[in-house]
Each structure stands twice: as C-alpha cells, then as structure tokens.
Amino acid sequence: GGPVIIVGAGHGGYQVAASLRQAGFAERICLINDEAHLPYQRPPLSKAYIKGSAGPESLMFRPEKFYQDQKIELIDGRAVSIDRAGRKVLLASGETLPYGHLVLATGARNRLLDLPNANLPDVKYLRILDDSEALRRIMPSKKRAVIIGAGFIGLEFASTARIKGLEVDVLELAPRVMARAVTSEVSDYFQARHREAGIRIHLGVQATSIEAEGGKVTGVSLSDGRHLPVDLVVVGVGVLPNIELAAEAGLPAAAGIIVDEYLATADPDISAIGDCALFASPRFGGSLRLESVQNATDHARCLAARLTGDKKPYDSHPWFWSDQGDDKLQIAGLTTGYDRVVLRGDPAKKAFSAFCYKGEKLLGIESINRAGDHMFGRRLQAMDRSITPEQAADESFDLKSALA
Ligand code: FAD
Image (tube, rainbow, N blue to C red; front, side, top):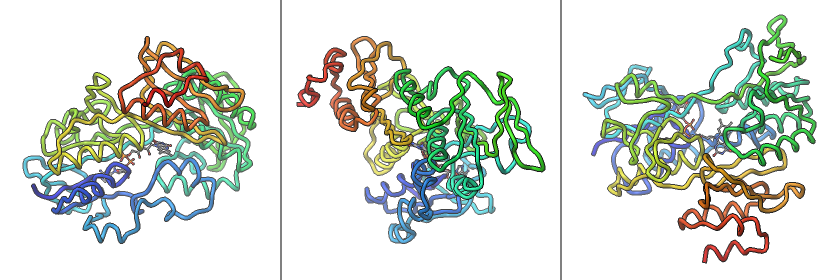
C-alpha cells in the first residue's frame, strides 16, 4: 500500500499512472515531470510535428483536466535522490515525497557528440519537444544540413529536412543505414529511397570536426578527408539510459536499471520501466533494453497490473515503426540473431516484407508499406505460431490460413 510515485512523465510514466487509475487504484499517485509540458508523444517529434505547424497541444496524451479528474498529481520538478530506508524521493526543489512504491520511468538521454563546437546553437539533437520546436524554428533559415548518424531518428529528420527544401547529407560510420536494427535488405531499400529523394548518404565515415565562424557552423570535416559546407548539424548517435538515480541509491544498473521479469529492481518497493530498464526476458533469454513506445507502454501496463494485485511476468511481443518520407517501416518481433531472410512482395514496387528466420523459427517481420503483413506478424506471434520460409516467400500462400 501507500502512494505510488513515478519519476519521469514520458510514455511509460504517463501510462503507469493512467493504468493504475483504470484498474481502480485509489491511493495517491504523483507523476514527477521535469519537462515544461503536459506528458506528450515523442515519435512525432522527428516526423509529422517537425514538418507541420500544429502546436504542442497536438502531441499531448491528455488535457490537464484528465490529471485533475483522475487525481494524478503532476509535479513539476526533478527527482535527485532516493532514500530507500526512509522510502522517500527527494526533488531538486527540496521537497520530499514518501512512497509505497516507486516507479523509475526516467527514459534515456542523447549521447552527445564529443567534438569541439558541438555545443554551438547550430548543432541540434532530437529527444524532447523543445528540441523539435528549436529545429522547426531554425530550419527555414538554413540551407544545408548534415545529419550525424543514420538511425531511425536521423533518417526521419533527414527526410523531413529534404521535404522542407534543405540540402541534406547523412553520415554513418557503419557500412549501411539502421544497421543495428534492420536487415540489409531493408537498409538497401531505404538507402535507395533517400538517395532518390536527393539525400546524400555517406557510409563508413565519421565527422572529425565542426568548423564555425563567429559562433555559426560553417562546415563539417569527414574522416575520409572531405569537407561539407553546412549551416546545420543534427546529431542522432543514440542514447544513454538514465540509470544514475537508481545507481546512486545502490540499485544494480548496467546498460540499464536491472529489473527482473516482473520489472522489479533489487528493492521490491522500486520498479523500472521503459527505455531505462534492462529487463529479464524469459521469452528471449537473458536481458533486454528496448527503446520503443510499445515497450514503455506495455511495461507500464504490466507494472500497473502487478501493483493492483494481478502479478504476471512481462511477456509482450515487441513491435516498432518508423516513417521516412513516404515509406512506412513496421517491425513485428525481435529480429536480432536471424540467419535467413525471405522476402515477400517486391522492393521495386515499394511494398515488401523481410521475414527473418533463425533456422525454421520466425523471429520477426520487417514490413515496408505492407501494414497487412505487419498485423499478420503481430497476430501470429501472439498465438505463438510460425509459418515456414517457403510459405512466407510464396505470395499465393494465404497468410490468414495460418491464423485460423
Ligand atoms: P521517455 O518517454 O523518454 O520519458 C522519460 C521522462 O523522464 C523524460 O521526460 C525525462 O525528462 C524524464 N526524467 C528523467 N530523469 C528524471 C528525473 N530524475 N526526474 C524527473 N523526470 C526525469 N518509438 C517507437 O516505438 N516508434 C517511433 O516512431 C519512435 N520515434 C521516436 C522519435 C524520437 C524523436 C524519439 C526521441 C523517440 C522515438 N521513439 C519511438 C522512442 C520512444 O519515444 C521511447 O522509447 C519512449 O518515449 C520511451 O518511454 P519512456 O517513458 O521510457 O521514456
């Protein structure tokens, strides 16, 4: 019993609060929010939001009234330490909040570029609403952007910047884009599509310096000796999980705050969810840290259920999406460790799926403009079923028959 205090009001934190009330939890709920906005959706920050002119309200999960009606106390501030023996959290303001259960939903922060001039105003990142607002504001006065890192966020922004009329270069150290996340078939497709759109993609290179004059960026030099004249740098080189609050309180943390399959830390009164959590996964074996809306919200629902008496291990199936230009990528499952890829559909027709197998076991499906395959994949996984590589490759095989 006792109050539930949630640190971090992002996708995971918001969802725990909402799900607790939905499940009838009647005690105090505090959601500690260190951003100057009501809790909002992050994915549009590098997609529709940065392209359009809608105001920040368009991103909010719920209006302010929801929190009042549901008696979810939104507390502006930052948690700075945890007193585990006294079961309370200390905020930067000096306020302390006693907890019955503490939820760490602190997310992740951008990995920073370690180069001189990387702190100039023309060097931007994309994590929070204020970052997206800042880019939206300065893009109209910029002519040529370089994006450092060809991950999801870097490529989503690259598409948007190109549509907005900027010249765009993307630098990626790996030999292909999104290399850690997708098959080479999907990387190849997106490389071709971005190049068609006029984006220059440079693979196997790194930025070695940022040149500036009078505080304004004038160019970036590359590890292969080339120099790009640019007036905007956007950095998307990954994130670091926010583990410090937990680690300083003596909780085990490594590449994330370590939690068991119930999302509990080593202290049974403290749980961690979402981007910050390195969770034990019986399904996948070992521990995982994922960065996705699905992971954060399903963690939140699993934890809210446990705190209201329905204790089950976390066992949701991962899924993900990314919108780049006119193409929609959707991923069902976790494809890491595949040894065979079977294509269904035709990349030349801009609609195909890559079915990823390890032996005969279907690990996941990466779909491009094939929402039906994606939904099929999610339903198939929910039923713990599979189809053979031969069936996947055969367009005359009726996927629905596998769900019957
Ligand atoms: P977050 O949503 O990051 O929330 C954590 C919050 O905690 C933040 O507000 C942070 O400021 C706050 N916080 C941290 N420390 C403290 C503290 N000590 N005190 C108080 N508050 C604190 N995922 C997808 O599935 N699909 C997408 O298309 C997609 N696109 C994305 C695009 C962008 C630009 C970004 C940045 C992310 C995208 N993601 C996408 C990832 C997804 O948004 C994250 O996985 C998700 O937000 C994780 O939720 P979370 O609650 O764990 O962390």
